[in-house]
Image 1 (tube, one colour):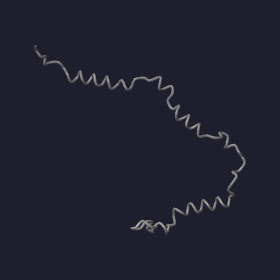
Image 2 (cartoon, rainbow, N blue to C red):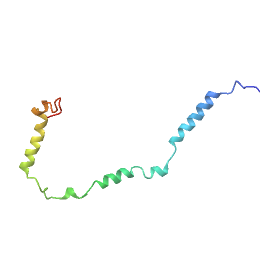
Image 3 (cartoon, rainbow, N blue to C red):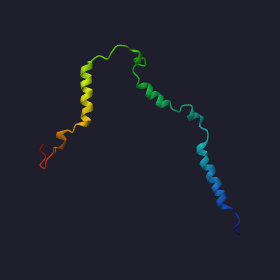
Length: 96
């Protein structure tokens, strides 16, 4: 049995590897037809009333002054340091 030493193993293996790798880039019409369908279904499931922007009636429940005070308090909470946050909440024996 004789071994042929002039057979180009490396180039042939590289061509085979390249061919196998490019199979992942092949056309997938079955998947392309439904691309993004799950995202669109989830987005449409989150919309309760598509015509809500056209509603001229104000929201019922919170008046303007209370909403403004709540927003101010919320914004101030990021600027003011909370004094109770420095306290140790649990001491060594487990009591608070």
